[in-house]
Amino acid sequence: MAHHLIGQASIAATTGARRDDAARPVSAPQRIASLDVLRGFALLGILVLNIEVFSGPITFHNVPLDQPRPAFVGWHAELDYLILWVKWAFFEGRMRTLFAMLYGAGIILLTRSFEQRGDAARGRQIYFRRNLWLLAFGLAHGILIWTGDILTYYALLALVVMYPLRRVGARTLVTIGLIIGIGGGSVGLYRMTDAGAIFEAERVGQLEQQAHAAVKAHRPLTDEQRAALASEARRRAEAADAPASVVGESGRSYLQSIGPRAASFFEFIRGVFGSGWILEVVGSMMVGMGLFKLGFLTGDWSRRAYALTAGIGYALTVPLVTVGLVLSQQSGFAAPVLMRWLALPYGLEVLPGAIANAALLLLIWKSGVATRVTTALGKVGRTAFSNYIGTSLMCQFIFAWGPWPLFAKLEYHQQLYVIAGIWTINLVASALWLRWFAFGPLEWLWRSLVYGRRQPMRGA
Image 1 (cartoon, one colour):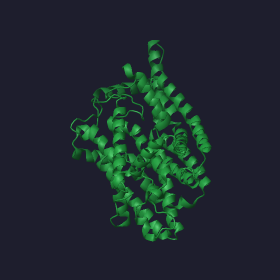
Image 2 (cartoon, helix red, strand yellow):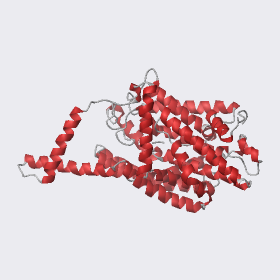
Image 3 (cartoon, helix red, strand yellow):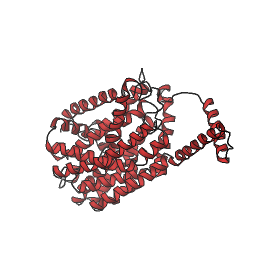
Image 4 (cartoon, helix red, strand yellow):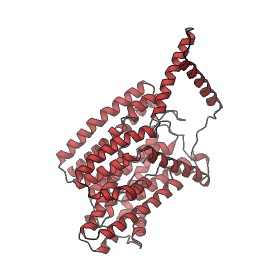
């Protein structure tokens, strides 16, 4: 899924500016640096999860089972387990949730800046035009480049749901957002993954085992056991007839891949909305709106408050993930166990985990102990839109479109080398670009389209 980004916060005009100032580049002193740092962190972190979808087929959500290059075997088995734990404990779902929170914060910042100038009507116009153009970008990304686009979801929710919520109180937004995100998101994920069918398959599997034991012991079979054996026979026959192949874009030309990619993209969108899993995103955006109003995302809390928030968040989520992974490993990563111990508690992990990640990063930022790191992250955050699309292009070239496509050819741990390389490009390119330009190239294009005229590009 992915997936993730582009808070509107970083390019809104400041309070008291003239009406035309909203169409001008935001200078460095006017930016909210904490939002850029968080956005850059989320942009880099999301690749830790997305790389699995770019690089090969996924049997179960971010657990590398039945891959052409299987994980958890050979000399790197322990390394694979460590990577899996780190991903689930600190990255899985947290990064796209943080992006959604930042997008919610951007809604407040953009609309508030116009309303405080007494120009709410223009602010409303800009708000809807921005999101309509973002929807166009998202659709183009999902159809032409990669099915894991997240911009489409943000734009649709912003256009249909989020605008009236901008005036709801901060604590109400956070409380209701947590309820919707955790509760509604959990129910939606249960339906999206068809957990009921997985548990039914587990029950049938138990019946099959009982039936085989009864046959071996020459005991009579029940009607359920006979049906289970018949179902097993049909399944084995179908499996024998199915060709063993890995389906990926690497086997098609680019033009041939557009149709299947578009179909997969729209099918996933229908699934996310139809199952109700979209409520996870709705709740996350509401929480972001509330946390922005409370000063959490802008770095206004004390270092002690951020440390306490991070500690509570990790105390709630890391043990839950650890227990789930241990039990899943002991079962041989059986699908029902994965569903029961990783997927069903998912909603309890992603929102608290994302808030904990944000709190820890803001604590580091406020403490000034890693200024070079946070400064570099801030530059990536300022060009997050361009980096997001650029990362998709790089990954598709590496794994599908290039002369030596690596789809389904990397070991699980080898994905980290690709991640490190792309992170380096993101960090270096962002820093170099911002030496001369105020916006990333796609940020500039987006802004120019929204305001209906070419925006100035030079300057900080």
